Amino acid sequence: MPDDELDDEVLDDEEELDEPEDLDEAALEDLGDDELLDDDLDVAATGDDELDEDVEADVVEVPVAVVTDEEDVDDDEEDVDADDVEASLDEILKEKLVVADEEDDEDEVPDTEDRGESSLKVLPKQPDEFVCQSCFLVKHPSQLVVWVVSLLSFGCPLQAIVRTFGLDERTVAAWQKKAGEHAEAAHTHLVTTQPRDLGQVQADEIRAKRQGRLALWIAMAIQVPTRLWLGGVVSPSRNGKLIWHLAQLVRAQALERPLLLVTDGFSSYVTAWKRAFATRVPRLKGRGARRLQPWGGIVIGRVIKSYQKLRCLGVEHRCLSQGNWEEFALLSLPGQVLNTAYIERLNATFRQRLCGLVRRGRCLLRKEAVLQKNMYLVGCIYNFCTPHQSLKGQQTGAENTPAMAAGITDNIWSIGDLLRYQIAPPPYIPPKPWSNRGRPKGSKNKPKLPQEAMV
Image (cartoon, rainbow, N blue to C red):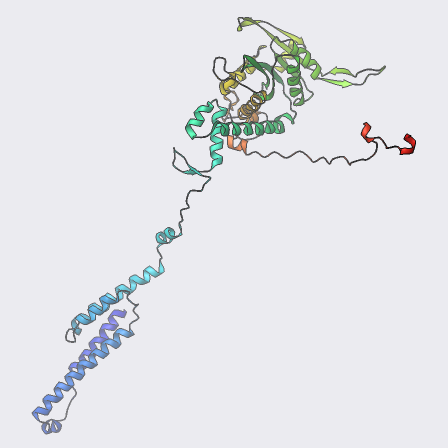
């Protein structure tokens, strides 16, 4: 060990100092007592000096790291006398070696906590950020927009949102309008423009209250097997024009396959269905409009209900305006009778989430466009973000949305995903080249006749 070798060297030096040099007897007799005493003192002095030099040399030769606390080392050197070197040298060397080992360990293994603390930087809150009152974390304004739109789409009153978040009513209304426009565009891109085998469709209307003792009507349709909301049309009156627009909307999403169409007793539905689900073919002889060739396998069912003082008392009878009951049994769900229960349940969902559709409420609608945007916002959230209890997997028990059941998407969307969905812009159509041929009609553009001809 280095400590043992160092101790042996120090002990050898001490033995050499203790043993005086051998002198001849003749030389001792020639020396006097005084001279001998002086020489002994000189030898002792020189011996002490040589001892100090040897000790310092030994300490320097030891590979000891530099001690940071210089004041403690100086105090130890001052306290140690030349007479006490033999007793305290071992302790001093051991302390120095221990301090050197500790410093080597600190240099080899740096403190990761100190390094991590020095690298952390806390940024101040930016002007476009806010602090959440529930989790006390800094949030971005886009999350606030998602929260507000989520509350609006589930029937939260606008005044409650303004009171809670400290926003202006016009700001909340603008967010709702933009979200409705985006939802309508997403519905058109993902649902309307993708024809599919519908199987069975139910349609109905809802009456909404409007300011000034007026009313707005919403006609909607649903695909029964997947519970997919197919869309809706808003009109100030309940007439054949409203039903015809809804029939065209359903026709754009259907493939030419057998289809069951179920409605209530409104007679305009039968005419609109027969006209929409038919193909125009040219006449073989004569002139005139092209004749309509109906699709094969179209079954139209009607559920006639009895009303008294604007209240439905029950179902009077069920009939088929086109097709037969055998075809109805093939197109309907197992054990299903002719009914409109699925569209009525969807109407209840819309009445719950749109305050203007509540029968007994103080919220009144003003504009038809606002109701249409809110309808598409609620309908898209129902299709893509709301799991349906009847669509849950029988074996796995996994939750499914109507869009997942229809094969449009493979996961449950959040409202933020719906609002961030990017829609491709329409294709660019170059304008027609400008032509200078012809002369617009009007007296100002007539060619001027010379003065002589006019005279």
